[in-house]
Image (cartoon, rainbow, N blue to C red; front, side, top):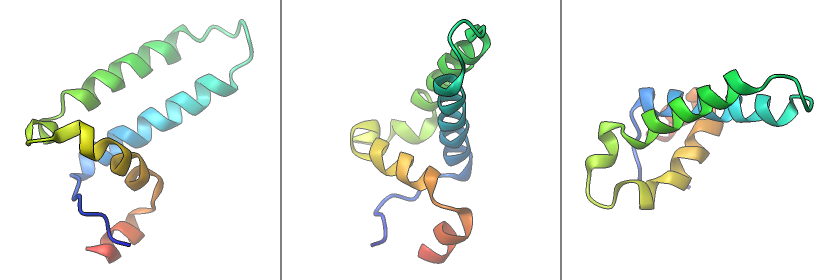
Length: 82
């Protein structure tokens, strides 16, 4: 099923970076010095939330889940769906 949302590529890239950083943080052993990962996650979260795409009506509330799905989908599949 095709998503009703068309996200800009830079927003998808930001979400992918967030997901990769979060995964790295989860897998880091206790006491491994995760400060840099946590700071990166905070920075990426701020950039995601303040992206101009979300200035549209309904914004993040309706598109957040779809963005996370799109970030997990390979670019070739996203292009084929358009």
